[in-house]
Amino acid sequence: MCYTHLLSRTNAQNDALLHKLIHTKLLSGSLNQDLRLPPGKKLKALEGRILELTAVAKLGKGEKQVRDAERNKAAKHVREGIARKQKERQKQELEEVSFISSPTELPS
Image (cartoon, rainbow, N blue to C red; front, side):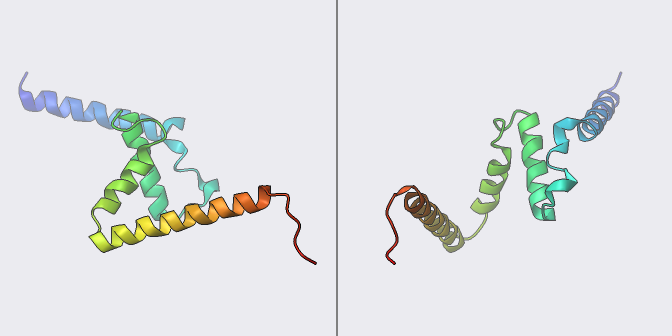
């Protein structure tokens, strides 16, 4: 057997495995039509799920890893802006939670 025959056989096996994964429940969560995700989010979810299945990323962390890699390709001022907005959102969510949980009355 020559090396190219082994390589093509391996590729054929990989193709069969990928076909099986796509048509089973392993990858279908990110392809669920009921979620109505935009195409970009679907692609990132699928890429993340593939990373999880290949054990490159921990389960549940694949999509975040894809997004982090994409963000790291951006210019420095863009990365800083994204980080700043993320901190602002977290601060606003914390304020909303503390406002909801505090038993203070609103003035009449």
